Length: 427
Image (cartoon, rainbow, N blue to C red):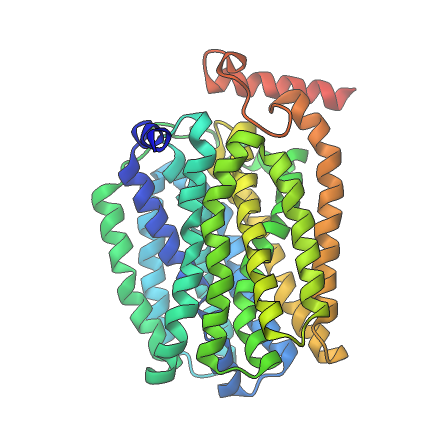
């Protein structure tokens, strides 16, 4: 308890709380089509491939919007960028309420829902910006636990859609966005670590090897989380013939685990290292997804396995973003947005893989196996790149280097890191 009090006092907790709420409600909006997937599919008589594509559109759109929002936040501030984004979300939900009445417009609405998916990098950087390096993992874990918005979506959207119609849910969601907007405006303060780089310097992180290594791992941890969270209501409804509301409730059990454990993942990674945590995460994800495919006839076993899988994915998200501020201490927001963008793009793979597997083989097994194989491939890559990481900017296992090793400022640390990386590349 005393340790947590020390953590709270080391930063600005109202900003951290506002960041969590902002990300939480944005995430709920982002996965609305997934939560209402059975209702939308029934309305338009969609086949398995169409369902998978429909659910992937918001994910892909959100991924593509993350980096531009991250760059914008460096010029107008993270708090202002969050306010602009939430205003656009309200307008997008208004479009859904008044105009979405065909499959084509559902796809267009999916693009607009992607606006909400852009919040990730800004939310985490804003929430953790007031905290020192040794608490960055925990602060980012708390802000990132806003992916619990999935729980809100799958818990409330199906019964509301059942009673009022699924188009009405868009309008109700627009009203709920007023709460995080008010809290952000009144409680949040722009952190002092504002990043003052040119656009060219921002884009440069797209061409770093470490940036792509992080992004590829995040395809599994976050891409798996958002992809599964969007697809599970449809999966439970089609595979086990439960009601639409029950499908949302079962999805809620799984996603709740991932959201809660994300904080623990950041906390544990601060102590044992993000690399060590990610190693265990990737193994567990591959194992549980394989077993989900094999045991697809048992609702109880599948639900428990999904809960375990989501716990691993949540811990993996926290672990990876414990490492981000260690590697990019001065460009955390932009680096986080870039990593989040590629990772979320990976989330679009899973619904399509599941839909195509069902469409052409009559089973979801090959969809599960394809993503399990991807997790093992990323584990192999991690074991290779971690050798260089622990020789340059991280301690063994992925922990933060002692304060003495960081010298007088984060800028000097970044310069030293850059020199070491250049030397390593040259050799």
